[in-house]
Length: 111
Image (cartoon, rainbow, N blue to C red; front, top):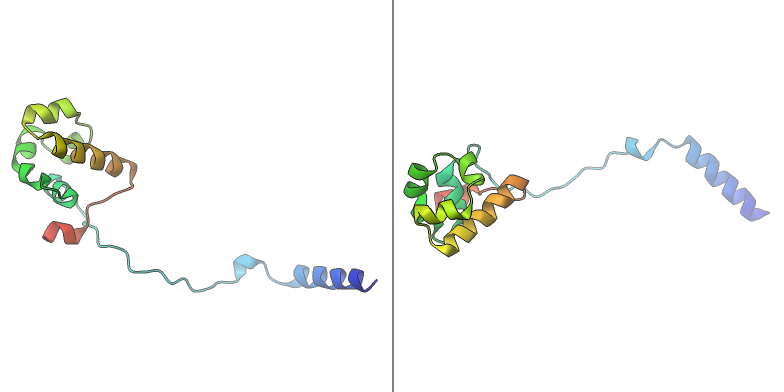
């Protein structure tokens, strides 16, 4: 009997209380990593690192802009004269960039 009263009283309290979405708690997030606003081929390759930034001039003259680089295949990069390790890095990070999983950081570009 006492258990039934307890259940009924908690139900009445839950019905009269405001919904949980009305409760706003402050959210504390860490400061987001600084990302550059405009990403071109130099920013993209510098963000990858690993020595890939040495090929900026070659890729800019042969491929042109970043959207073309993002859909470029390994054979075209090979014809441009980029070594295998650097091709793998470029292709890996271009796939991540297309999916929205990676962006070049602004501090990596300055370095």
